Image 1 (cartoon, rainbow, N blue to C red):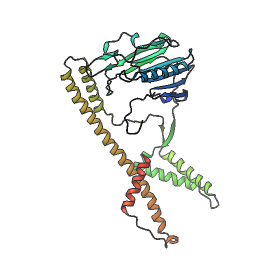
Image 2: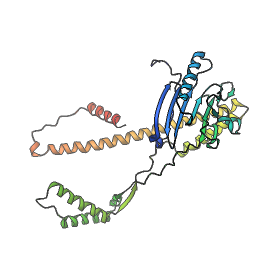
Image 3: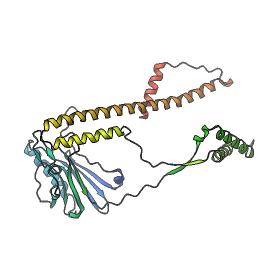
Image 4: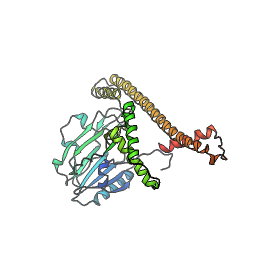
Amino acid sequence: RTKRQRATSGVGVAINDKYEQNIESIEYVCDRILRVNIMFDQPIHIISVYATDINKPEEMSMDFYENLQSAIDKIPRHEKIILLGDLNARIGNENELRINNTYFPHKEQHKYTFYDNRNNKSIIDYIITNRSFLPQQIIDIRVLSSANIGTDHKLMLGKIRIGAPLSKKRPSIKTEKFNIESLNHESTKQLYSNRCQTLVTLNPIAQFDTPNTAWNKLKENICKGAKEALGTRTVSHNRRPNIKPWFTLEVKNITREMKEKYLQYKKSLQHRRTEIFYTEIRNRTNNRVRKLKKNIGSDLVLAKWRRICTEHKKRIGKMLRGLKRETNETIQLRTIAEDMWEKYFQRLIRRNR
């Protein structure tokens, strides 16, 4: 396929990063089949597939199922297999595989995985396991009808007990920091200054001290004075960062409203009327989220720009102070054009993103 041609196939598997060390191997069988081997107490093989359409030539369909059979044959029969994806066909029991979609008595909206433009529905997406999985390990398989993912296919949820070890809670990483916020009070600021002066007097830097010794004494005096005058506080470092600052309470409410309208649209017999209501709120939600992302992105870029400018302002100030010394009187400062500064900071921003 060339760069200008539109992609017609492709599969992938997303795995939680806490199981990254358990991934033994990844095999790219073809552009429609991907096999991932994960090792827990025993190996589990996840095969993600995307079968050819029924409108494609029969040779392509035969090639796909031959590749799939070849991938399954490579796996020992006693090891666990999870086969999932769009299979577009009825699956036989040649490999002693179990189709789990029909095992659970769900409503119709939680069974059908595909709806076309004429509202015809069918089940063509499957979660299949082999006999190494006991029936008790398959907890639930259902279609999430309320998930709007912009395709004719519906999102499927499979709950399978695979015997993975429970993830251990990460140990809390805590450090002590000085209460520098208390320096905003004049009394605390004066107390800190007095304590530092007293400690420097009691533990002075001698004339013949090495630079390292002098630095250690100064550091000890400053830290001891800060601990006595300001106090300390414990800071935790293992909290998850907020990767979605745009997901505010407002977005949460309109998203919930959009979900309700979507369910009404799917259940109602007057599809045209409910579709108009759903489309209106969907567009309003998308526009609001887009605007919030843009505003927050601009704020983050501006904050980064200010931080970079502050850092370079300090460096430039230090350089200029050095030029005023007697030893540097012969040095001339060349003026830098404004466009050069602009290009320089733009490169820095791109590099730090």
